[in-house]
Length: 330
Ligand code: FAD
Ligand code: NDP
Image (cartoon, rainbow, N blue to C red):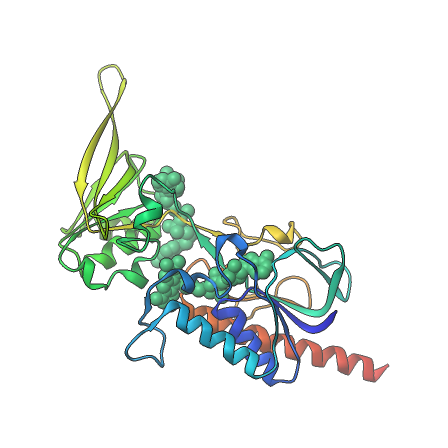
């Protein structure tokens, strides 16, 4: 199978790219993934309850519903959607080659838009599978305003910029925010650290890790913590366990961009995100574009992913036009 535009990934970035490419009569093919990276087709929004910050839905919309709408809109304009995960690509030949999982044959494409997203890291501690989205989340900005978190003690795990930003953000709603840091220092930038230190509603629990989440069968209510204490006299380390009451638990321990299938054929930054030319979706291989969280470690929101998906489709269209112009001038 050959496509002018192949889109790998099916979150807001991929679907926006598909809508634009399809409306430009480029007949895109989308590889939406089959639980790629453990996430359902439709992307990270399928893992949340309500999306309240995507324009056009003043009452909010469920994560599943909005991803269904993205998909329907892509199909309406003629996007061919394959419920398959891309296992491998070959980017050093044109047309580019694309292998689906469990297939020995390959598809080809003139352009590829990579929109495979990033997966929030989780630790899968005891109780997590049951209480996930019942107080536990990996996105404070998305979920923090929910009524179950209002005026309640909340926990954020991590010591980076995300954790500091999310802890500060949650103080708008929480009675108190505990920041669980596994070491005795924060990794976050100085300015973010200062914001945390200066926020009276945040208490940092150093050298502390969560080991279990407990609840009442409906919502989480407390977390078992393990804290390491070093005796300054002989440097011996003791470990203690305590229970901390909390109605919310937010992971902010980093994201893993879904780039494994690229097998190092594109430059990645030090955190594994695809490098694009600033202000565009272009990678260092002409005809290969990247959009959404797979190339964005800063904003990581549905609307920014959608915006960059639009950019990728427009960049791909322009690239195809330039190929056409070159061919006509020969
Ligand atoms: P993703 O949404 O990550 O989608 C990528 C898709 O590509 C996935 O379905 C994945 O399975 C698929 N894929 C991966 N690898 C392959 C492959 N090799 N082949 C084929 N397919 C592949 N943002 C907001 O703006 N508002 C919110 O309320 C909000 N809530 C959130 C709640 C949670 C719990 C989480 C985790 C995130 C939330 N976000 C929210 C962030 C938002 O979901 C992301 O910023 C956005 O989904 C990123 O879109 P994307 O298109 O880049 O990729
Ligand atoms: P980071 O990788 O920077 O930080 C992850 C944090 O989680 C670290 O403190 C790390 O601890 C901790 N952590 C990792 N694994 C575990 C674990 N198993 N248990 C407990 N803690 C763990 O990720 P971020 O998402 O914070 O940031 C990613 C990038 O995005 C950074 O470049 C950051 O600067 C940027 N960013 C910038 C923002 C801004 O400028 N406003 C906002 C958000 C992100 P340890 O330190 O011990 O390794």
